Length: 77
Image (cartoon, rainbow, N blue to C red):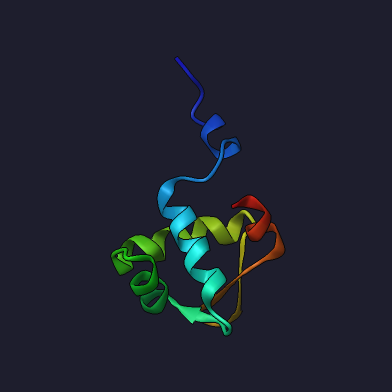
């Protein structure tokens, strides 16, 4: 049976990529709803995925509830 931890070591899923690509287009920190609209995704899905992206260091939250892509996030795309 394969170990589930391997998935984290692999590349980003399509939703994560869409979120990072949307964040690249913003000039200021953006909220979940704005990111979801730009990425064409449901807001709850974006909210859940942002937590994981933040834990990986691919996005930061300079203002509560607002997000920006990091240099690591740009490299991951």
